[in-house]
Image (cartoon, rainbow, N blue to C red; front, side, top):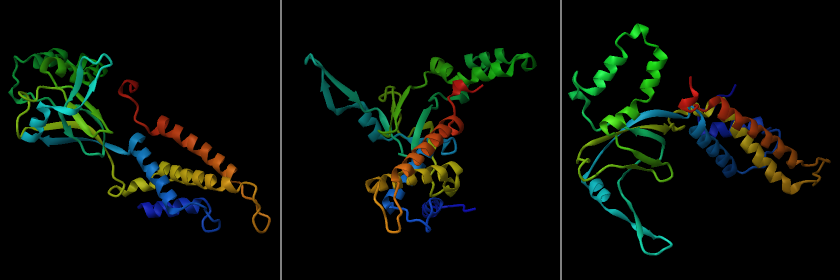
Length: 268
């Protein structure tokens, strides 16, 4: 069985599954590349093996602080026309392969905690006798630890959009941010198939890429619907297209129900 380890090998694998070289697959190289690129992007976005959870650190510079103190040049005026709205620049640039950001670590130095600290007392009260404490109850408490941190320590709220590649941190950049200070974020990073070539050999990737190419093939042939070729062969691009659409529908449902990581509140 073929085990593609590159984009070129996956391309040939998909075309062979569709009948090459016995049949002429009427798709261009660019169309095949587009189908594979779309498949990889979907794999990275939704498949639980398409991205990894990582911790990245960013060193704050004076330029970042100076920019955050001001506002952007774009302003909008309300319909009343008597007030102007502006947006702050309190953000750091994020690499484009970051798909999601869960938050950032507290700026509080936890190395100074002692037995009189409220967090220490809360843990001590919860685990006074671990043998009689339900582990599931303790686990659920830990899942809400970030909320507790936010209340007790003032963890800074963040906003992030993958389209912008900007992580907005809503705190006072004048007093809270220090030059050369490191900001550590908890995020998800899309796996690069050129580095982790096993992605090209994933069953879902091979099936979906083949179906995408098949759909494009059928779409290309629909313009010749009813045309009889030499030897009495009649092209039926509509049937090829419809078959591919049905295959993609099944694979999309499989991706979201089987391979996608469920939300945290759905685990348990």
